[in-house]
Length: 195
Image (cartoon, rainbow, N blue to C red; front, side, top):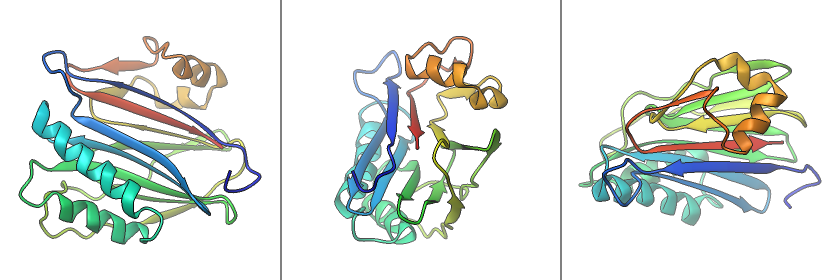
């Protein structure tokens, strides 16, 4: 552990029916004083989308310990030059400072649950493909008991306020999602973080 704060996560992923690989990718790892989480969605579906999403998570796992969050998003953009492209959301969680830094490009959705309220960190519009981007970093303070829910666009949350409820959270951790999530005919990924 990076600190005395207990944390846990749950992830679910499914590829689009006609493909053998998922066009989404995720990575969660600890680097000394920070926890790093990324969800990436390669543009389209199939092997090329899978490759682009994997390039993002590989960059995060390689450089997440040393780069600032904005630098890391630029690195993810650089590795997708001349590739299919991807959208991605990355979080740095600092347990000593009890802060969460968020940087997103594209339509990965992120919900932060604190004090029975849901907030939505804002992503930068567009996608990663080696072209110029100006990603911004949002910093949020968190306390023990807070949660995050990230998902690719293959999922819609039926009622956002249900994410506040412990019953909903427990059901989602067991992939009992029918009442809470709508799945599209697409690659899909969701990641849940508990602090």
